[in-house]
Length: 77
Length: 169
Image 1 (cartoon, helix red, strand yellow):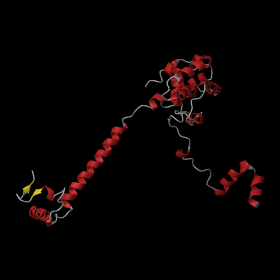
Image 2: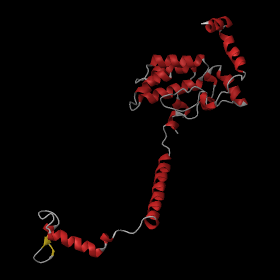
Image 3: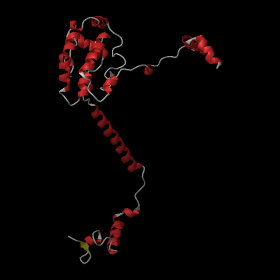
Image 4: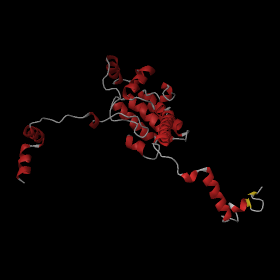
């Protein structure tokens, strides 16, 4: 995952979906939320990418019960 | 050649123990700085280790709950799980610190100390200034420069009115 974040791109929804499912297999909710934060950070100034990703991932998020950082209030300080 | 054959006979796992026994000192002490460290970085979102290494009792039970369905966890529990694994969220990581004030303050302080040292030097270390800096000497120097018409076009002597013996207005 760290290598993926090292690349100059924002991962597609399918890739992030696989990462979230991997976190579920490892019983690691914190990493799942961290992944979402990292992907949002990767988008940089392009603010429209992250909402689109969340929209695409919504079925997976509800299925696995992962809250987005926004829902937890972690994107504020 | 012989040594490699002997090692192969011993087997891989036995090598380390046999080496240790031979050395007689046992296994080397593992230094803390050689172990994986935790650090918050934007480019390294998942550090090698969790932030909290020693879990309290309720954190242990929370981790047990994490094995089940995540939808059953409340928001506070999810945040608690996050905080076990990570120290700062991405938002907190990117926050501006007040470190620059310390830096500027430190720099100015050191410059001030240097200034004090320089002043002390001027007073106590350096000897007197040469006699050629006396005002009378300087006046004679200036007169000499004007007499030899130094920089007569645009510079010094150009500004001197030699008939009236004064500076040009």
